[in-house]
Length: 245
Image (cartoon, rainbow, N blue to C red; front, side):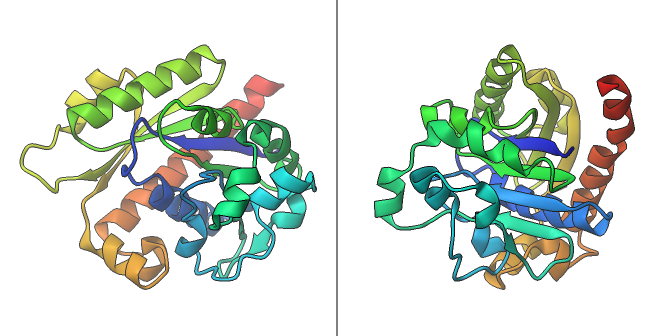
């Protein structure tokens, strides 16, 4: 049975989608079969990171028509990595009920080692529905106090809701002299620090080319941090299996 991990944050623009895409491919390169799910029903961007232009069936179709989510799973150009995209037109957005996400996403557990859910930011109903579709949580924040504070609140709410918060990723660190350092960020967050993704121009270059940075520039600073994050997540597998037994 696969692990379902929600990628969550307290505010928009922290880089959840970038982290979801890069972590998915990094896990694939470690031999894990991964499905990335775009659960941001109003700002669908995940498929762009995988170069998927014509998505076909989407998570919106699943929610609207009640179909099996496995019919919306698409292959990507990357080995062992699949994606469930979201629609980009308002008609689909208006009809899809995010409250059904926790019912449909877990159906992927039998087919994949990891299901990564790209969630909306905040604590509104659409964000909560997406985040609660996962059993585990990775929080994403930027090195500024407002982002840290908002994301910490999300983590506390999800922990109270019975989800396992694995920790947080400090994304885009080092771009400004006033960035809050990792040690101080961990004190503010009150959750373990999983990874520090440095500010790296290669990430932006990769996005312009329509591919994740771990593929575009695998030796870049950001890519190395993503691979370290993937290795850390995989390293938790044995402990979880023992606990579940």
